Amino acid sequence: MLEITLELRNRMTDEERAELDVMDKGQAAWIASTRQRIQEAAQEELRGRDSGTQDWKEARGEAGKENQ
Image (cartoon, rainbow, N blue to C red; front, side, top):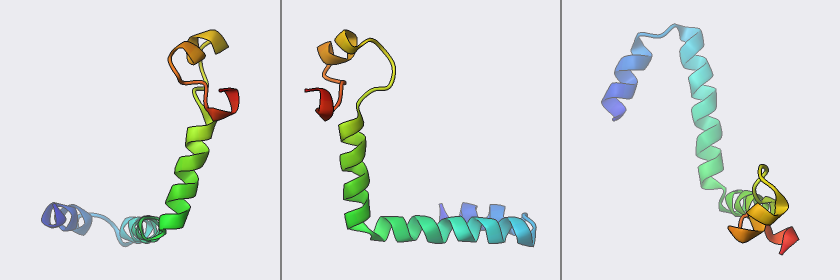
């Protein structure tokens, strides 16, 4: 996978590679931050589904914790 990534990035402009480098660093920081990932997961879990009627969401257990 790394070989393919490097090959594709070598075909890019310096600006494109720099933009991807910034994204790579942000992703690496996010992966390294266990606390942040746990907090984000907890927030998603609380939110529940956005679409569908309330009855439909509750019947499927997708209403979120605030509605249980």
